[in-house]
Length: 134
Image 1: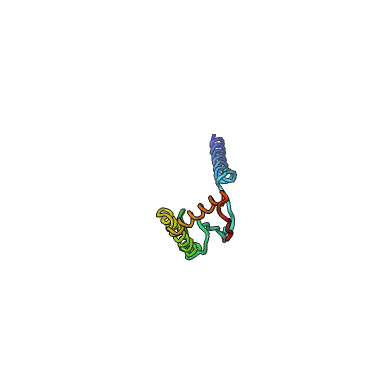
Image 2 (image 1 turned 60 degrees about the vertical axis):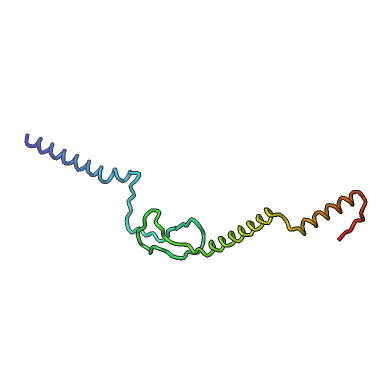
């Protein structure tokens, strides 16, 4: 009876050890989300992307620092964008000036010149006036 009890305890211990080995070692090797790495993992290059292109004015983090998602890592020099804004503002000003001229009408001299051109064209069409090429 004592031998059977000892054999039963031994079998239970062996089964428990085998089960632990399977659970701890073998089952984790096949897990899809587990990566086993041996040695050192050294990442030396990371691609940092800005929403716009330009020269980097200032980096706000140092190499090796931990960063969080959506954390500001650097600033881009705004000289190009300020120049583009100045050009756009100048263009807007010129277009506003042209609109004001068109709203107020033409100068009297331009109106008279246009009337004379229409009159000369009508006379030429009827054959009443000589053609003058300037």
